[in-house]
Structure formats: C-alpha cells, structure tokens
Length: 177
Image 1 (cartoon, rainbow, N blue to C red):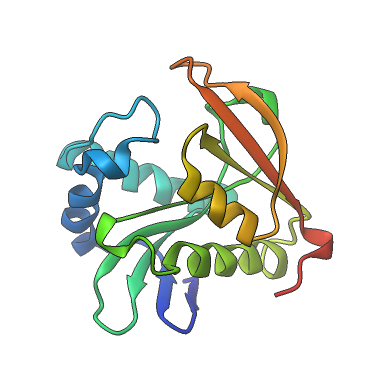
Image 2 (cartoon, rainbow, N blue to C red; image 1 turned 90 degrees about the vertical axis):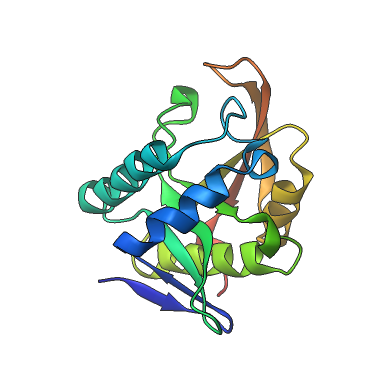
C-alpha cells in the first residue's frame, strides 16, 4: 500500500471512514465552484467518486491520494494523479490534481501534497511529463501549478460544459525533489 509522508501530511489510499469528510468537502459550493459544472456532490456521488479513484489505482498503478493532516488525522481532501479522460485532446496524459476543504486553503497544503505527488510520479511511476487542468479564473490552483514549476501549455474549452480551461505542463525529466 502506497503511503507518502511530508512534513505535515500523509498521502494514502482511501479508507471507509474518509467518505463522510470527503462528502462534506464535495458539498461546499465554494470548493466545487471550479470543478466540472460547479455542482456540489452528495454522499452517494462522493462514494461513487472514491470507488472510481480506487479503481484507477488498480488499473493504472496511480491515483488520487487521500490527504490527511499528520497532526490531527483529519482528512483535508485529495491530491494525486489521474487520467483526464474528460478532455480527449490532451491524451495520452497523466494529470495532477487536488481538492481540499475550504478550512485548509491558504496554508500551503495543496502545494505540499502536489509536490509529493510529483515526486511519486517521477520516483515510483517513472513519468516524464504531467499536466494539470484548471478552469480559467481558478487563480488558487494556478498558483499551485506555478509553485510546482508548471507552465501554460494551452487554453481550450471544457467539452461537456463549454467553459474555458487552461492546461499546464511540467517536464519531469528536470524535476528535482
């Protein structure tokens, strides 16, 4: 079982008791504002998402980690790798992404977790390139991308919802942990 420790976080596979706190994160309109069509997700939808994320681990050998605060054991959200099948024009590609509860914003947790996920991409998966996709206007996520050393690759449109997206990329052959 893959588990990564950073100075303040534990990135790990999903546990059954992660469902309720992740559903609370997904039920927050501010958290979901930039995700898909911006709709909040309920408990059942969150359970389906976690099941898909775990299946991706089994199918791809990587996935979205549950992000736990080391000091308290609280679930802060997720960060990790996925295949962005919703945007066929970028495939084949692996995307790095993150979603944290609002109470964890602005404390460097997203950058810390994403950096650890990039290290995993290089050291454990041998990836040489990763992308990240954000809705135009999601400045907080784009700031994390810049901190990771990602650069703008292209602007495009969400195929299902029609809003503008930005695709950032990083060449991991030059990534230094």
